[in-house]
Image 1 (cartoon, rainbow, N blue to C red):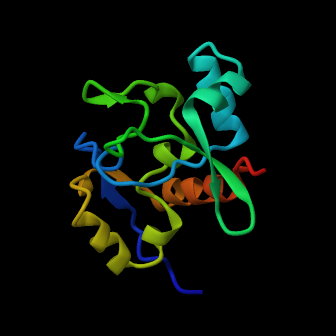
Image 2 (image 1 turned 180 degrees about the vertical axis):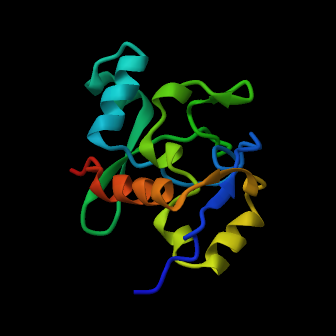
Image 3 (image 1 turned 120 degrees about the vertical axis):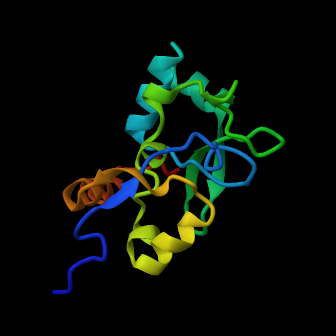
Length: 145
């Protein structure tokens, strides 16, 4: 079996550019665990949180729950230069940039560097840490309806 390109780890340190939280349309799909953490953080019921901060997205076969965006495509929780729910942010956000598509090849990782200034900078994340993120993302049950 071939070793992954990240076998010696990868450097990444968030530069707080907010590029992954702002400017472009996208989805932040929530898991049951994410919903629980976020609703607790905001002292809301899960139903109230879903009504106020989420949208149902047709993914071509089922519907998933995503955080809504502001009109300018900023995440609904991006405020005053940062995340208003940082300590309860969804797994999708916490695991960035160690997502499966970026871990498929060195080319994919290097392409990400063109839009994310934290790639190849700062802390070394070990192969084990990266694979924990990948496994966590696979195991997390997204909310579907």
